[in-house]
Structure formats: structure tokens, C-alpha cells
Length: 239
Image (cartoon, rainbow, N blue to C red; front, side, top):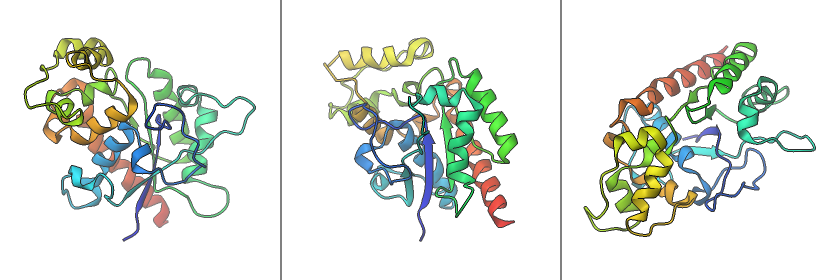
């Protein structure tokens, strides 16, 4: 079975949190995938497999290949947040991934991600690009930050190999205000290190129920956004 290839804009970091140096459209090894890339895989898997749920046994092989995003060739490489706010820059990445001038598209889907706080420029840019290129790039907006999706007591315990019930429950109001700070507070109860690699582990361990626990985080919208994007891209390629 052919792997489903996806580019996730908003990641591009290795397990240490540094920018990855992989060539554009190179498959990203599991060990270098960020938390958001893993969560995108989790959202896609049921849509591509007759609603079968994703589980951690699929972490290193679920038929979904994460590709390194393409790069913009300018003297100063812009940060991803800058690209997502600029329709002209964003269009270059979307075109390269889904609408290349020559040859077949290297990706089956491109997904943009942005923390919901301050996302208005990204929302406008994605809307403009989708209209001009006739794409349906979904924009996933964890609110207020991706940690709002990850920070669950059991996920922390499993990712950090802590005993059951050794980590306090997160405070929902604190998560709403500053999810990153609330995760750091919980990690501080046992001296856990806050880093990209461990957040990626948490993205694998957090249960499906916990991902959708709080309506305000935006996870509930992810399946339909991804489903619509898959259907739109398939329809375009069938013409």
C-alpha cells in the first residue's frame, strides 16, 4: 500500500528543538518528528483506515509519511510564523508541495498549524492561498498553544516514566491562560525537562479521549478539517 505523504507547516524542528536540516520532501524519521506532526498523523489515520483508531503501536509505522517542508530560497530564510502570515511566501510552499509547475506533486496533503493566539494573519494568508491555488489547505489552531492538547496527567506520567497518579491534574483555567506554563508547572513537580522530544512522546501517549477532553482547545474540529482537505485534494487530482 502506498504511503500517504503529508507536509506539516509549523514544525520543522528536530527532537532537541533545533531546526531540522533535512532536504525538502525528505521523509522525516520518527525520532525527529515533532508533537504537531505526530498529532496530524493521529488525526489522519482514522480517515485513511475506515475509522480505525490510532494507537501507540503505530508510532513508527502507520502508513503516513511526514515530509520535510520545502524551503524558500532567499538570502535570509524566513521563520515559519513569518511564512504563515504572508500569502506570497506561503503560496510558494503550497505550490511546491501540491501544485508544482512540472511533475507530480511530492505530497498528498499539506497542513498548516498555528497557535490560535495571534493567528489572524495566518488565517487570512491561508484563505488567500487556497482561493488563488484552488487548494484546501487546513489550518489547525490549538488554543492557546499545542500544550493545551498534550498536557494530561496520564500522558505526562507515561512519557516521563512516572508512577501512576504521581503527577497532579492540570488546572483547566491555567491551561486556557498559558498552556506552556501549566505544563512546565506540572513537570516542575518532579523535575521533568521541558523539551521538544518529550512533548513528541506526550503526543503519542495522550489518549484519544483526553485529546478531545476540552472543547475550547480546538481538537474537535481537526478530523473534519483534515477530511475535507483530503477529499478536496483527491477530487482535484481525479480531474
